[in-house]
Image (cartoon, rainbow, N blue to C red; front, side, top):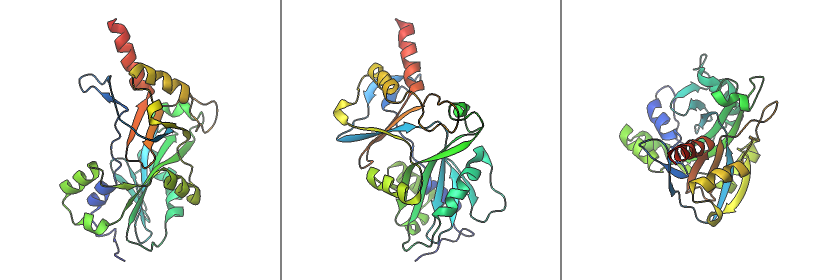
Length: 261
């Protein structure tokens, strides 16, 4: 088994290959004004709806030898054994106990990346929707397995970024993701429903009403009354298609349309 030595490895490459890719909005965004257009992402078969939690993306990168890194969406913040970690948004404090439970000496050479939404505390302006006492929580929303990291580490930065943005990361499909979460004792993002793709609203106005019906309040409040949710994430069963639908996008778009009438 190849060993990845954190003292000598190219951490910029590790950071790039484990970043979470951007998720498109279910209805496409108009680049001119940020409003939603009527074109939407095409799904087939069953579609899983999960709550979109309003926090910040964190990741735990578990290396083949059981060491780990903790990062935000854009940068690595901490490596196992660091005396001082980057305190950005409380991600390290929230995820370090989780990371310690995930480490192991692997029997293969892959890198496994756990993506968790860290929320509450002072993470975002929406934290009050989840806690009145600044508690911090986290929910697992994706897991990626990088099967040949040694090869990736030999690529130039531009090639790694193109590979990632082109869908090169292998994410666990829905059933495997839930099984992994159960086995590790990690709470996943709340599952709201599984629906047929043909039953998804295609019009912006109807999708706005659909959000209000499916996800009016958060299901992951840490204390006190539950505030509004941010929206939903839609995923095909094999995770080949994924999109997000946020209340704020639909509310902004419909306000603008009403103002023009």
